[in-house]
Image 1: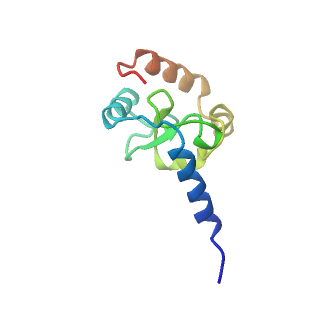
Image 2: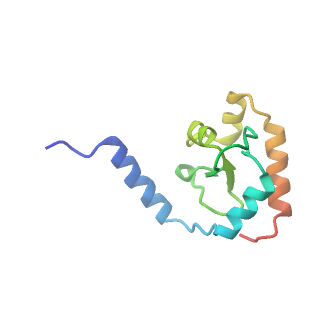
Length: 114
């Protein structure tokens, strides 16, 4: 009888990490974030349905909160995986300064508290 696949072990660990943290991002907050960004937070793509991406990955202590989630296209979300955001932006040659300025501006100007 074969053992549990690597993907299933990873999925189980991830579900455990997510469940062990306070993840309080509401649907209203998510809608506000998508509206505030208006595009993929990383590549500025606008023609896809956005996914919730944690700036600080869950595997590195992040959680799904208003202050840690940005809208990302499927490609960027998959590519970023659990990398640290600034090093990933540099590697992809995206505009790191622009992302960070928008991220701070949206989080400071956000009307919904964490």
